[in-house]
Picture (tube, rainbow, N blue to C red):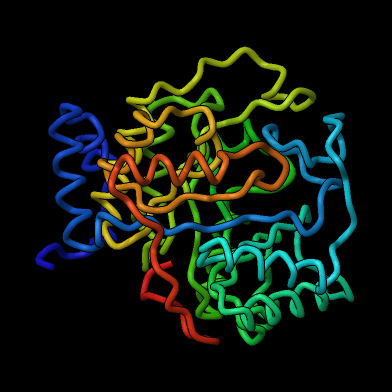
Length: 332
């Protein structure tokens, strides 16, 4: 690999990449992808909601906020046995990572967190990488998760710092960054990306990428989500233009070029994309997806459809080679 990982990207440099002629941009991103990864492999992860609804935050896109009436099926924290059963099924279906999501504002040192730690241990013991997304996290809590076997922590920045306040008012952009710092201090890998289609400007998208690309190290996983509007949420009840596929491809390709060793994940909103749309994203450097019928509370692509798409495109799920406590690769 001749490409040097950079962490001093400027907004103008990333903007110049983002604005390149689309075919030129895709070709460069595809070339970078092949320097760092096997372009025929796609990491397949599964995301489950271990505790659904009742979150005190006001994220304008989220159906799990207690203040919104979204008719989701709320449920209390799952048992360790329930999560273990799901982990066994996920492994049997070829997943290499299971992500545990809880609708909390922040982690609290209580019996529920203790149970999540047991879940992490149980999933790890099944031979899967374990990821968690539990909200704001203190350093001592991150260390406990690491000791339990957590491999990755997801904490998206969502959008640019300048646009953040229009999407969430119950926490600050700096709170997000502080959690990421605490995760790094515990030597847990970082999964961090954002959401397109919330009414943000093109500059907001580029600024979001600039924030991610100037983290040292880069997030090992970068999920690129597109908004799924849920009735009852502020953004669900707003008239918004759908994200054109060309914008999504530009985001994927630019992320691939500026963070070449990171997994770039097609995450929420993939169900709204055709095989052809997704093919362009894979060509532009995407190499990870979430599988399973739901992403927390929103619908996701069927496994049969994903496998048919992989067959058409000549792609295959990344093989499992995880041993207890040892991830299958250096990447997240």
